[in-house]
Length: 232
Ligand SMILES: [Ca+2]
Ligand SMILES: [Ca+2]
Image (cartoon, rainbow, N blue to C red; front, top):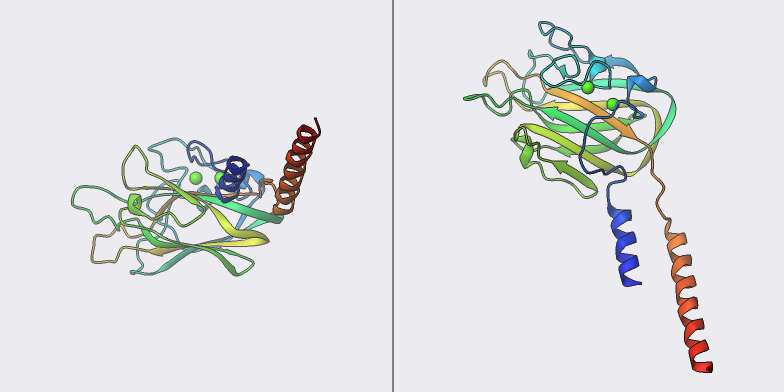
């Protein structure tokens, strides 16, 4: 029974959508493939071809070394500027967990804050529902409870992050904010680079009341077996 309770506890505390490797999804609830529409966003770099805001939410081809599946926010802003994207789902959805993929620069001599953000925030219907403070480089980010951070084999500049929301949130209007990490005195590449933001529903887990019933049934079964053996 102790082992069962331990296993169930691990399942309950674990990340709902956890898999062996965190990879961007093209079928999630925050994806343009499922009808998500961008309603507003801060400006993007214009000199990079195929720099479309929708690529933050699916769209494009997720092929490495191509710009047509990631976004680059504008460079002409200062340290702490709040880059953002507002988007809406076709109807209200309940989100239990999300994933975020980003990459800052790591060229020789370049400050790691280039193309990085120091804080990510997610809002549902105007309410803050999650906030993540990143490390620099991203690979040093501390995973909050209920989250997973994977270090990419391609380098320490990648943020592969997945987290349960503290509690599930039902909303149709969402906002993601990225607080700029670099300033204008550290090179020109200050607009954060973001690869994907995914949203996932709530996966069914045993409810506490169900666990209590299991425990009662199990204890009753053990008691009955003991009574039978005593009666023999
Ligand atoms: Ca997606
Ligand atoms: Ca993408």
